[in-house]
Length: 102
Image (tube, rainbow, N blue to C red; front, side, top):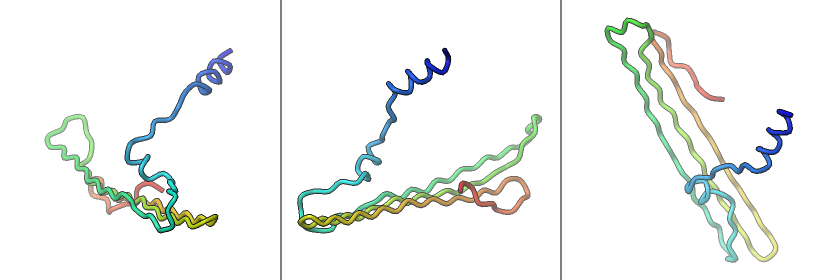
């Protein structure tokens, strides 16, 4: 019964797409030229604990993301390129910087 409920819910649910993702999705116009664009984001995060009785460690993180596309259409030929990259580092307590994500 529970499996049936989850199946019914998954059929009627839809993912949310942000405006930035909509512009990055592959779109081919009826023009004979290269169309390109992208988004770059850099995030910084810091946590500082002073006289904190519950424990914990100070941390500092830097994360970056790059998402680009280049599309070309001419007559019946179509060439679509996308590149999505992300990288991040985290320093927690007295440890060295570590790579975060995959």
